[in-house]
Image (cartoon, rainbow, N blue to C red; front, side):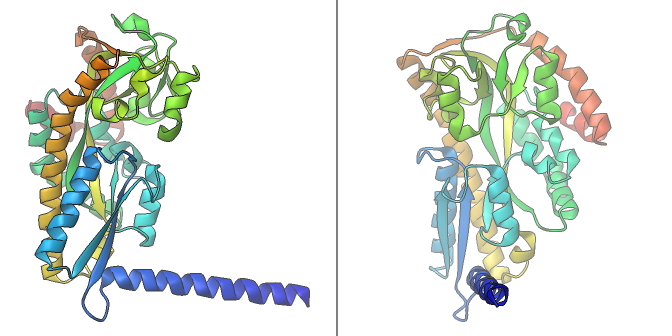
Length: 341
């Protein structure tokens, strides 16, 4: 009898959850009054982060262009600080647009996207923009849509800045990396590169990195000024020294669930895409401006920055690029990107 009662309770609870999910889905796809609500999210918690600037611009344009018929709710780290959480919410309908990295996208089985995470693939923002805003970016978007069965629809390519090394000591040569633990991706082409040049890739959650640097859990990390300086990593014992390796002009995807997007009216789709374009430009402009701003903040706080001869780092990356491109079937795409330099 107790088992029967317990089973009935569980069935009732499941019914209530499914009903709630149905209500959420209906509200985002359009209610009886034709209004919809979009939940958009990124994994950064700082209100000054370029992601937040971009998504607030998305909200502004969508709500203005729709005369309030489309409401946008922006979440800065409150739907999850890990990309995996955000992507799962996107697939399940608990979020309508999220920001993710190429490194995470490859975990979904779309191997070719790892190409955009190659160290030293780009040599300037101009080069990066030519790639993502041109035919190659369009080809990548179509590939993602096809291989995800339309779960993921790329509506914008965002930047997370130029990534540099920062750690407990400055780098003066490749040899200085040997044996250093570095917080970075622990699989894929990024990990392969750092391993090749002597470092030890280590997995640390972003939200735990400040403490890990402070407590000597990890020797170093790598990221762009607006990201690690906003989190005060440069004030930790193992984050004081920044060496401008410039190893990655990073790409981020602004994704929507393609299946849900296709259910919106043509007018709604046009508004959303217009807002995505405006948000993309706003995010990039904020990021470009903040790179210099947060570098100066870092210096004012007592952080130290040095430049280095990057050519040995670049030479080491070529072999990794060629090998990985061949393994994921992206050799032709790699050459196209190189040709645009």
